[in-house]
Length: 113
Image (cartoon, rainbow, N blue to C red; front, side):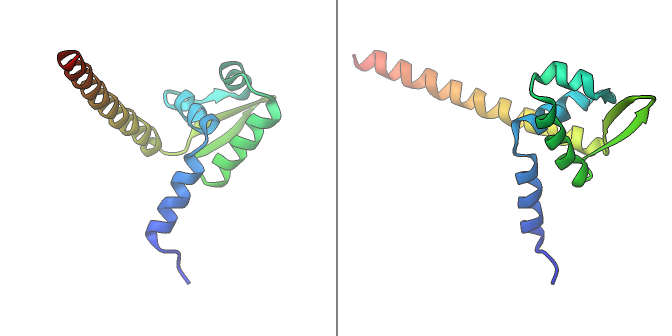
């Protein structure tokens, strides 16, 4: 029996729902990077990074290849980078809306007091 599309989407977003995975994808948006650079930028244990990279590879979100003794990672599809850019725009709009609401609440509070 086929998985309903909404369930597949939920599983996809659940897979993305880890801060380290999001950070890895952000770092890979512009170009492939070696594991050592990812470790330096994320500052987690190598085993933890390896686990998160394995999840991203298993879902086909990133690919890896060897260059000598260095393992390089890259985003498998430019659509993933676009998804991250869209998420950033959505968050920016949400936060801007919250700041406007906060300003209105503060203004209302000062006029009542």
